[in-house]
Image (cartoon, rainbow, N blue to C red):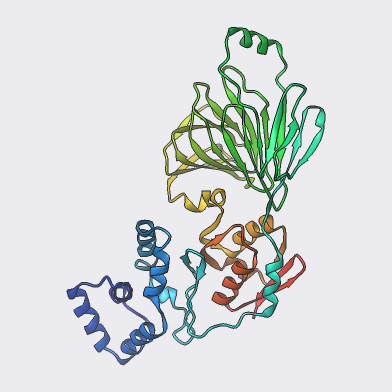
Amino acid sequence: MKIKVDAEKLIAKYLLGDLTDPEKEQLDNWIKNSPQHEEFFNHLCTNMSFRKRYEAYTQINSHQAWKRFKKKYCQVSITSIFLKYAAIFILPIIIAAGGWYFYTSSEIQVSDNLTLGDAIQPGIPKATLILAGNNKQSLTPTYPTPVKVNHSTTAIAQNGALIYPTTPNTNIDSILKQRSEVIENNTLTTEQGNEFRVTFEDGTTVHLNYNTELRYPIKFSQTKRMVYLKGEAYFKVAQDTRPFYVITDHGTIKQYGTEFNVNTFSPERTEVALVKGSISIIPTKSSQEQFIKPGQLAHIEQKNSNISIHNVDLTPYIAWNEGRLIFENRTLENIVEILEHWYNVDISFGTSELKQLRFTGNMDRYATISPILKAIARTTNLQIKIKGREILITDN
């Protein structure tokens, strides 16, 4: 059944309770114009508690929720949302505070096998600290535990974080002494299914995602603060006169005190999301420095060192740092890749076509994998089988 664009918008606004009197008259005329129109409209009103879903959605953040909700569901073609009148379901799943809401014309039964997902726990705070001389220490402590990071410095590991002692303001004597000392580096690494935090001696904090390596000096120099990153990390850089540099394979990020996320997982590009402050980016193969502003996402391309800057909602890019998994129109293949790394599982597809299905959702990053698998199964009628840490997604 084909619906005109104007009717699509009117129906969406009606379901949201946002219809003006002139628009209501237009919708009434459209409904009366065809028995098919009337049947379709009545079906939506009686079988989809759209307003209730929206009310739950607004509990997260009323202003942001309304802005996003209208953007997603008032400007999208209803004909593209409803795949078939006889079996209606929305593929982008509406975000709610506790998980994913979904619509179906009749509830799809979820296999009992999916309850096995409750046994698959999320990632845990764990890291390996590599000292000078390649000595390694595993870090998993909950209670404060002293960690000797070199001959004269002891850090404290607790609650999934490594905290270095702060360095007081230095005088000329200590500066001269430091010049004669060899600067020692520590390296912090996380594996699949792990995360960790570190606080440097200047007060800067860094949250490492899974499969990440961060190399840094135990004490920063008098002129600059420099670290090396592979993987993904969220930085909260302490204010200081010394610039702070993050070196990646594709380029260098420079700033003086701010919050930003750096993701180098893709071999093709490095992704930088600026939350607060101001930073500049210098590609590895170029000396050209480019500044980005808060709310902007920058891509440093590996192939030609080009920098592209985008004004976007940064929430999906930094949500992991706040304990959420947020997907905005992402392919199932992309979502599966994230789930594999965070939950330390192996997920495969019955057919390659399934990888291109797209989803939108907001999940608790520290919940088991079960809720997200159930949401995928309910909205697509896919079959998901779990055996240990292996998961197979197939057509039902």
